[in-house]
Image 1 (tube, helix red, strand yellow):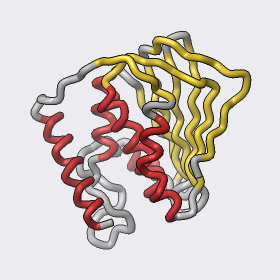
Image 2 (image 1 turned 180 degrees about the vertical axis):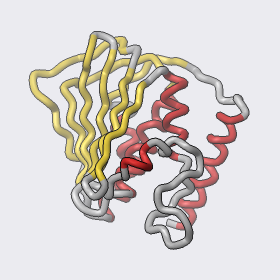
Image 3 (image 1 turned 60 degrees about the vertical axis):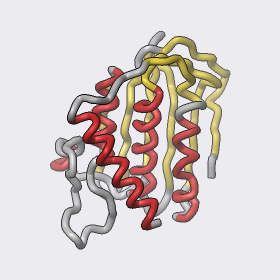
Image 4 (image 1 turned 120 degrees about the vertical axis):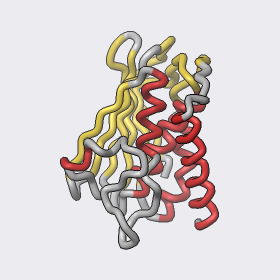
Length: 195
């Protein structure tokens, strides 16, 4: 766990530095939002969710959603969102809902039953190195870079991000994905319980 934490921290710092000096290059390609990005990112944090006895569920009305965006940054948006959702949730779990809201837009909602965020802190969420709990006595590890990276990657891809939360009752983060190329719909919501 310690070595994984160090690797994550170094990776976050390098990615943040890359953005700050303007060296990150966007490479738009065609790929599947679901399952290539959503399930792939979820699989990266499943073991952590299992170790905490949390559920992790994906609900979608679509078998496939093709979009054109930068794969690396799109993957990291959802990896960091899923990682945070699991990290800040002690009981219950995480639900991801994928839905189409117009002919070229989809919405991905990441809903957790975690500790929640105070209203006063939400406006600071995207500030690098910012955390609601600070100092050596804080309960959760991390350096406060994940969500600032998510916001930057959303901006790169012209995605929209919004956050609603209530202290002690969990958090919902919604990403509006633009540039949908094709979406194959099914009759009912498909539910995938990864745990």
